[in-house]
Image (cartoon, rainbow, N blue to C red; front, side, top):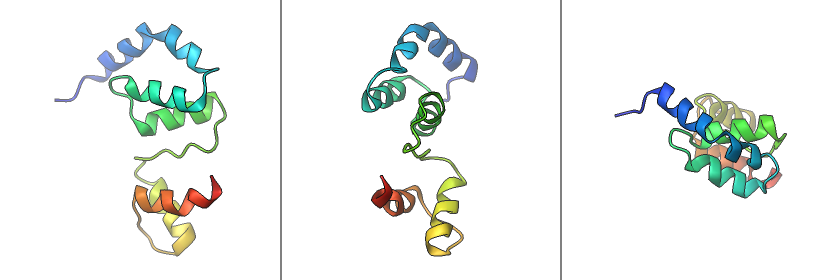
Length: 93
């Protein structure tokens, strides 16, 4: 089953020093370390890194709405997938 949110938050808080060091780490290292935390996935890692580090190139994969908005902006279709979104955004990386 899913781990309760409170347990995930406590796990992250216990590793606060590690998270603080990620603020100055290489983007790829920070990304992989954040994703290694139990309960943190690509969507959360992208939002944390884009907000805390100003890394605007990180796309929150897994967000329900963003893939649809990006696909619509490029193709006019109402719905899309994360994979389509990333393919469409690749030339702008």
